[in-house]
View 1 (tube, rainbow, N blue to C red):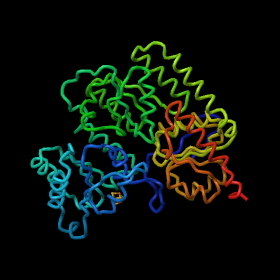
View 2 (cartoon, rainbow, N blue to C red):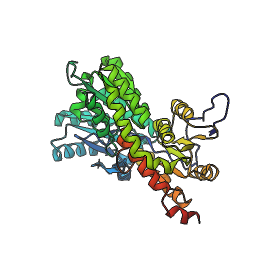
View 3 (cartoon, rainbow, N blue to C red):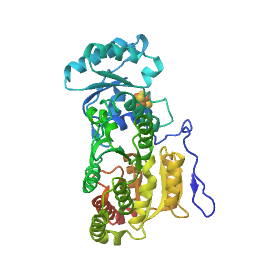
Length: 423
Ligand code: SF4
């Protein structure tokens, strides 16, 4: 943890394991892989492990997905479960003939026993005539869920992305990398891009069917929206297919404006200024009453890594002071970006546990905590309003998303119930 002060930049220690015994807010590598892959629609998701892992990995970004499990027990751990996995793949493929492929997630139990998942996958693939792909994600094989994101991205690159034949470009098509389509964010982004005459081929992985991924190498531009996973995919696709990329954010009017300008420039679209100024004016006038309520209020941020910087900027645009910006598994780049967006005196923290968060809330006295569901009850017990991010109600991306964020934030901060909680 560091406190931003004057002088040279200091960043918190990051990308290191949690101390043994500390109850971390991080998730396991398997869950990181689920975070990336859960929304891939036309494949069978099969968890090779005890049923508890599947229960844990079923709900991602507050949506429940169909997830099958081999339901391993003690006997399978002792004697091996390769045949059980093979039978499960065959049964799943028969039950869901429309699925284009099977993803088999490895969990801690099979990671420890050294189960030969690849062999069972190859054998089953030969029988069913569809791809059966292992996702090598035992929970313990990395420091946090971030390793699972990387494993999932590597798997998509190896088995799905750009497998659709020759690279004949699709006119005015783009991919969005690191966009998970939360509460309509992707629709907002698509709507903005359609003003430039562009269409989205594939959004990794909020809207990533196997056929869209197969054609992903045929777009003219990759747009990185979430830096961590997006950058990995963008670098690999540039190297393999020569696809250029741009890194942007669609959160907040300032970033959205510059995103539209830079993408419009890439495609040589004229007259974007007019559209941007109209959208900005509308957002400004609709958000104005909420901004009045939020002026000068303090906000603390603690959530997944790569959006802490862009969201710190958006809360600044709401007129709020960001007094803490933390993440469960941020890397140096994430904290560098966040550091540039917060004022002196703000705390930057990596991998905080709940006691540290409680202590920081007492010290920094935010009017609002923004975080994942795990931090919600901590905030409420301390009498502090809480905004879930990724969000639960409506989009936050684009100009309309900004107004929605302003409305929700003002509603939370000025709710009369908090006066009772403090009293
Ligand atoms: S840590 Fe291991 S056992 Fe626990 S949910 Fe993750 S993969 Fe399953």
